[in-house]
Image (cartoon, rainbow, N blue to C red; front, side, top):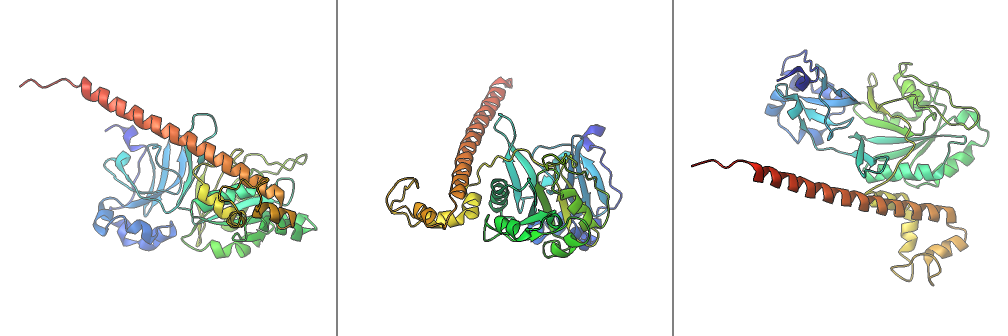
Length: 362
């Protein structure tokens, strides 16, 4: 086996260490749903390790006494758990995920991009300035709901506005099920106000545009300035990319925090249930329309149009719902077509390889 097969693999402890110190595993986010996928005997030979960063050179993993880089693999992302095979690192088993954040990858190749796995809470971060965008917040919340992750909207730069209740009310309009927290990303606000979701062993993620304070929030939770931050541009309140990769940070005595680069494009796919949960007010109204196939345009007995006329529903919210539904249907169909073609290609390759094998002479 060549050195590249090990991906600079390093192991400084004995094979029994993982099973001897479950508290350390818990600090890394190890939960019963992962333990149920293996056995105590298996853990002795293949100890658990978590992917804490994905580099071009490979996967950085941490475990009890394990700090290593494994060869790259397309099926793993930050937050995943692996059962480490020291003899053949490439064969390390990927455990089934509790949650998975994914999106349609930017570009035209119709691929799915894995963002992060096994996240417990998503903090959807936006600022009380020109960055605030209801459509973007709804998109992130739908992504979290689809992944079965608890979403929380975090409003930063709350100390710089005089009409804070207006911003909070606007954020609350996204969904009655999503808490809204307004804070100053600097100082003690994050530790105090985000503590209900940042308990030891929990994994949280900050998602949002560049410059809204995601890295600042991570530093505030950690009580340090180890993560680089940059100021926003004054002309349009937009941020510069500071974080360049998705990476988990272990907060001393607390949770694990995923800091992510700002995503310029977040295309939803296979997210119908997440959209329905985000817009459950519209979904509930549509159940009272006279016709089951109502398009909510000019049909008689449309409950949604009636709600708009009575001022109970913002027509702009209806338009954003329609846009997300159309986008999700298009992307889901495109990805399904891509998967079908990939399966057909795989079958063709297997057939060609099988037909090309020389027959054994008797």
